[in-house]
Amino acid sequence: MQCCLAAFIRAGSLDLSLDGLAKVVGTSKRMLIHYFGGRDAIEEKALSLLEDRLRARFRASVFPAGTTLRSVVAALWEQTTSAENRGVLLLVTDLTRRSWSGSARAKHFFEEQQRAWNELLLEFLPDPDAVEALLQLFQGAVLIYLATGDREKGKRALERFTAIEAKMPRIKK
Amino acid sequence: MQCCLAAFIRAGSLDLSLDGLAKVVGTSKRMLIHYFGGRDAIEEKALSLLEDRLRARFRASVFPAGTTLRSVVAALWEQTTSAENRGVLLLVTDLTRRSWSGSARAKHFFEEQQRAWNELLLEFLPDPDAVEALLQLFQGAVLIYLATGDREKGKRALERFTAIEAKMPRIKK
DNA sequence: CTGTCAATGTACCATATGGTACAAGAATAA
DNA sequence: TTATTCTTGTACCATATGGTACATTGACAG
Image (cartoon, rainbow over all chains, first blue to last red; front, top):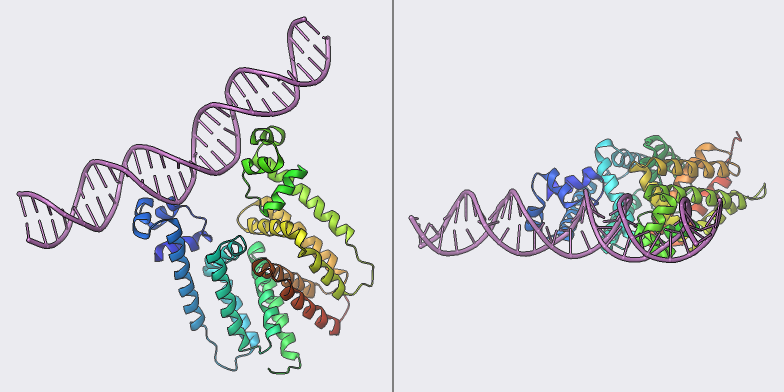
């Protein structure tokens, strides 16, 4: 299953035929179905595994209390757009699309991701509206990054956001 | 061709088989290929038509000089996320994905859209960095809107952005 | 050694897809 | 009227896909 997920990540999408998947994993379509029980089951297991992995990554990237929002966001951006994570980013984006194309599983995945990010950011930016805006900016930055390959645009925009937030008079909630 | 584009818009994607397309349009796959010359040609013509239509919409939505950034952005958001434009929005988003999946045509489409929006916004926000950030925020807001169906989140975030920009001391360039 | 059962390859099936061959109208120029 | 060209339906083809049938292999218990 690890190999399957790796293959999906390498493809940057769940749109990978069983034959293609099998070739990458080094087995046959016959075996994939035999072991895992069909296309849907494979996608389901791969998604669960991906969720686990993302949760683990999130737990690992816990920042010490008092870290500035600026450096948290910068670190998240670096990690999200690093070359070795490009596949994961593509896959997650593909799932986002599926979540509005009617896939209940993808919708669930998307919602959990949103929740996790929200929770994390709220620790460093204790204003729900601001976090909401930041998440949208981050999503948009990712999209532009994927479309243009330019990491700097997103970096600048996020930097700008955090700089303004740092200067804002704030009523802590 | 108008009908074909309408069908793509209704599907919210270019992933519509010739058979499916033909059924919606009220003809046969045979005829589509005969008249337009194959799948690729149909997509190409539909995209060109869509580009024309979006350009026209943009020209129509010219705002009088002096309009505040806030109302420009609010109007764009209303228009972009209106129910009757949902199909167009889905289609454009699908094209954005294709632009990073290797489709040169989609990439060109994406770049032209970006250029047009950039140009428009620059008239009301004469700071390229701010426009860059605004565009990313808008993209992200659209994504969240598509995934959640909630227009308010994006509205709030954009409102927030324009409110802050209005208060910022600015060196006009 | 022999029976049993999991593991696996090969060949197949049904469906969907983009596309073509061909023939039968339907219109139109001569 | 006749020859030609345009239009269109039907049947087909090749490929890809998820999935199954069946036979073969190999290990292991008795």
